[in-house]
Amino acid sequence: MERRLTFVAVLLVFACTKEETQLGLHSQETLTAAWTGESEDGVRVVVEHTFRAPGPEKKYFSEQDLLIKAFGLEKSDSLVRLHLVGAGSALQGSGSLQSSSGQIFDALNQPPRGLSPRARNLWIGLAQGGGESTAAQTRRTFLFKTNRPEISADLLWSRGEMQVNLKGRLWDGKGRLEYLTPALNEKDG
Image 1 (cartoon, rainbow, N blue to C red):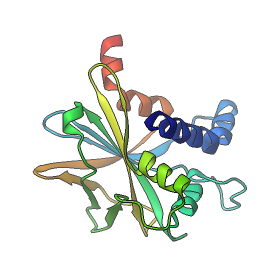
Image 2 (image 1 turned 30 degrees about the vertical axis):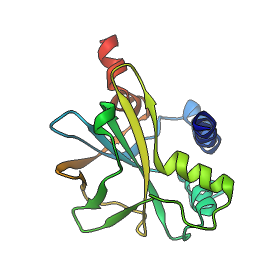
Image 3 (image 1 turned 90 degrees about the vertical axis):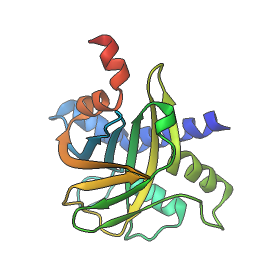
């Protein structure tokens, strides 16, 4: 069941980003915003927006549009993805997320009642920490929602006693991949 959910999640991401990938081949690489930081014990934290359709015309459905509709969230809500990268035992639970300006992000923990079975499985697979493992590192991903689509300040992620300040940055697809897969890069280097 978990493999099927992972497959559906990967398929959804590819389906929603296909047009952007094709456009990127013919033009400059698109830079995206992210907020990154690392805890004292080596857990890397990344926050990024879910993919949104470019431009005001919205000719294409975006990942964000599809998830908000499937999960029955408000159209005014915005979703961000939180990645935790580190030793598997250090990645339990989504923690909490807020901006330095006081903006609070709500973790999508338990699925609401009334979701269809398909949407419920999608919620569990995407919002509640679906993960990938390499020999030395694990990555878990959680979804958070906010009613403000733009994030203009630094972020603070916390869980229990652990707190990580996240600084804003712009990166391309290669920089993102390198940051999210440190164990593979250390072996290659």
